[in-house]
Length: 389
Image 1 (cartoon, helix red, strand yellow):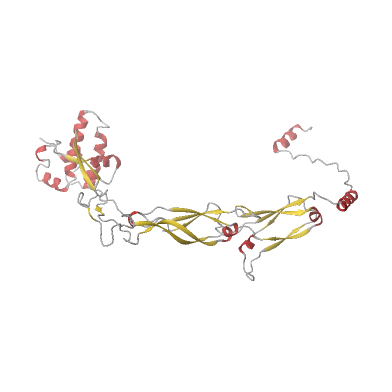
Image 2: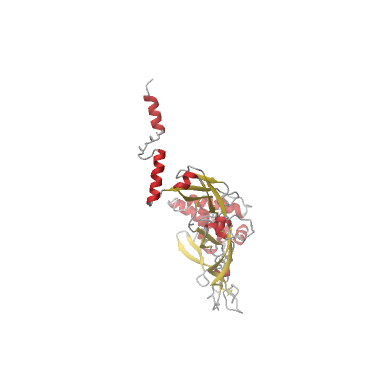
């Protein structure tokens, strides 16, 4: 006498499909031969799998409820009881192919890949923004077939092997009975349709490679490594699918005067020894001068830097708001470092004047005062403990 299929799965006779599937998954994980290799568990696993094969199929379940034999002459759990191997995988991994249902054909049209190109810009262009024309070589829609892949006037036809399902069943006998697995159709490669007459321009791909010109707007404040995204300007996908995105990676070229640190600009100016001693005013170019603004635009191309009398080499002057604009607003600073130049070649008159100046200042034979090195925090702490009280 065959056992009750509902009792085997532990569900009520009015249980819905989801309840039956959950019950089967739970039992399959407990009874699978890889988990419980003993003969009793193997036999019960075959019975549970056969019960699920019947109760998950509406027609077989209806025949069983009417008292019929859903297994025919094969008997319960015999070789006539076939079930899908995808049901077992579904029990362990929660796949969407449970119940022996087909997953359907895979789409011939897919999204294209993203593309990346690198663009070198000047420091001023990176700081204040620029619009550039780029020549890019990517896959675009085939104009001959409109991205369909078939020759003009023709269309893909339903695969005669899988009848549009995109997959075919493979039956194999084992100790579990007949195991049925679904594999991609070898004729249509899982698409469910066949292009009998491919387009000559794209060879059935629905896309061709082409060079085109794009205009990219570089925002103000970008730096080396910044990527500007151009939506849907990348590679067109297989089958004429939607294009991916194009990313433009910025590379900022070195500047002859300014060095960038974040949003701050740094530069060094050489000042003669006499100018540093007496003081002067220097006229220096701004970064905006590289853009060559039109006259009357109000853009400053130079600025004045006062050098105070007695300025020492290494002195820094910070000019607020003259650096690089930030991507999120604000603007960095310009840091100017003074480098005092000592003359290396003197004529007789210059040497005489310098000697006279040295005599006036009492510097003919300088002693070279050695300034004590600044002690570290550890040294100061040690001296505090060793000082006499």
